[in-house]
Amino acid sequence: MASADRKALVRNKIADYIKVGDKFELMGTGFKSVNESPSAQTDSTTYINETSSSTDIIGYETEFSYEADHIPSQAAITALWKDGRDHHTGGDAQHEYVRVDLYNPIGNPTETAALFKARKFIVANEVSDYEGDGGEKVSVSGTLHAVGDPIQGKFDTVTKTFTAGDFKGAYDA
Image (spheres, rainbow, N blue to C red):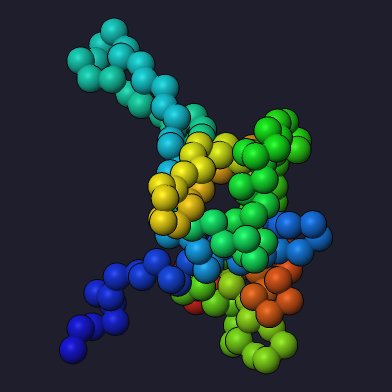
């Protein structure tokens, strides 16, 4: 049996939610992938007394690429797809998005609260493709571009609410 300290994280232990109207909707059924790319931005300088450059991280351009089968009853997919269909731009193409670390609980889950470490982003939705050949499932793909910095906090998967703050989860020192 494998030791718990060597067990790799499985993707279903990270949940993604997007706000549709006034409610966070799970980006679950229909989504084949939602991948995070922090995309660190760097600044490198070689000083006159050195042969190697010094590099600093000066920011991030975080993106979340996604691909989903278009299931019209899934509110998250339909909301993202509509941005492309209706050619939304600027604030009309922006959403609140929360990435929840289901592997990192805060306290003990109960019937009324299941709290986990989370980050909330404002994202601009770029719909790249809407495709499907005859007899095939129609899929939508794109990228959620972070607008500004993420907000650290916790997410309750029962009430689907985000609370900003510095909360310690099971895997935080």
